[in-house]
Image (cartoon, rainbow, N blue to C red):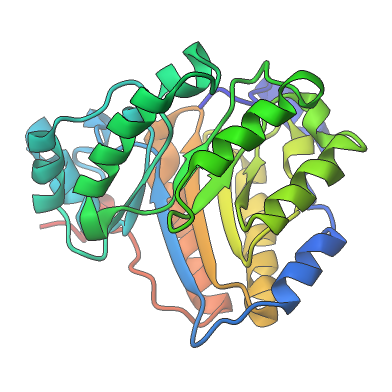
Length: 301
């Protein structure tokens, strides 16, 4: 992911501290009706990585088996590939056969809907999307919407809200905004209050070059975090430490679900940072999330 990318020389100048929670987050979590422990899922944005062979995929793993090996390491995937092309029915069945019933695919609405048509006159595209989504069955996770980055609150608020209303109420939906005006008053209050009223989730994207997207404003008792690292720069680990502390705080306040997807500008390094995150979460939050295994540590057979 290139979103929010800055020159490495600039990283030490950026204030990476997480902002305080917005008052809406406190309100939403205080109304949580969670029963039992927080559900947390950690994953990456791709499984088709040849450079992970010999790292977290056993040496000699063929491309056809990348998903099999990925699903042994993680419990979910930010399913971005669907943005570019809908899978066929046979593809979906193949993907399901390579995972277990607990594994979740988090699909992104496809490019034809959000970028080419910009959420207008998309009923046929939506019908095709939902048909594929239904085929995933128990493996279908929440969906996420990223309106075109040029869609702003002044001209496109009604269009976006109308589209969100088209999403079935029984499907968990999270929204990420890219246009900078969404984070300015009064637009940020209007939209995020509307999302909360309609029980739709907000995505927090943590990247170096767009700190406004780290809004710390939950609209449901669920957190969807997209973390963009910088090739294992020292700041990546400090940022993860802060997220672990915040997630622990939210857990104590009643957070129901936490979905954390690891991105790097060089995706080669996503497994390392995922491992670091999971180990820290397990210790801090007293969880038992499976920790990715690395060949370099003699853990792959």
